[in-house]
Image (tube, rainbow, N blue to C red; front, side, top):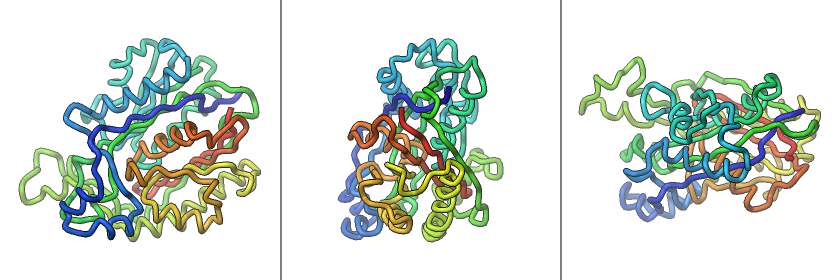
Length: 328
């Protein structure tokens, strides 16, 4: 037997932030925002929409679509750069909130490639452990509270949300075919959130260092990393699977920004029909972006039984990952 994705779900929070609103806040034209990012809107969580609430809603949707009873979920993997507390992990809160009585739990912090890594770990765990049959993987982001609105590139791209998938046993020949991961750490400091980490604990927050508790991103370095290293990890995983690039039916990338995705697709010489994007509507939702995009591609019937689907992410650090699935 193999392991693969049998269902997905998503949750988009209630507050829609258009480029009109961003334009007024940053005092730059909405035309420039669209030209630079390709993003038209993003969604922010309200006071009633906590990180665990969004994650639970996406998980409930995936569970309903899977027809897997809650007591048959053996493990929950949450992918997020923060939990609601420093500890315990967010996955344990999901086990509690959804009453998943027979499940273990842990979190992954791999930033925007977290969900891809979570899917891979889930598939490998099922294949290696006969006692594990169904794993819930959730990617979530509550970024709006960390945006620095004095610097456009640290604010205009990002949104909140959550996506989920159920990974289960599937017939041999389907599911995960190959995966790959590597890190290029030369630009380790170029996308970061310093505050509340071990070097700058929350107790040292003050009016003089408050920007250290907000996103800090070097957009140009991010672009360079993606256009060089994401094609590399994609080719590595295809070589492992002995599959050619033109045999892949659909590519699901981390949704960083539309212009970057268009450039990446052009570099790989991909037809627009072989990619699916959601960044125009939801912005960059970090760990949730691949999950949300996969969910919408399935609803749009871009994936069918037997489709070869390549999922690839890039996260701060910079961590690059790719997984190739044959859909069941």
